[in-house]
Length: 112
Image 1: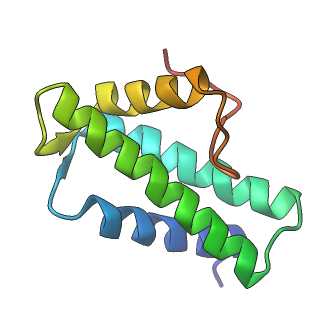
Image 2: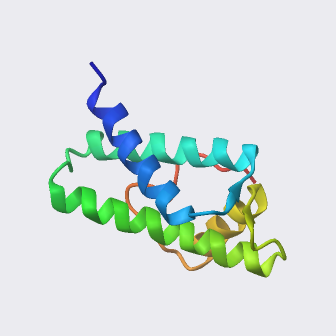
């Protein structure tokens, strides 16, 4: 039987894939995103924020992060794909604006 955390990870991954749509996800970026989804699921469990309202808010925050990545992909000149650079730039823009997207950002790790 899948753990509650793995069910959340699956939910978030599906939200992410829907938001990404037809764009290509580079393998390194996929690794970053999987870590982010894993971290987000763990954060929700650790904080006992598992109501449907909490999950919908988390879904919305994940969609917002993917939208930031898509904006960065355009700015970086490769609008058809999400790479490590788009992830990093989206993260930097959140950090610079001092924004948090619970439960995903800020993560306890940085890749840059």
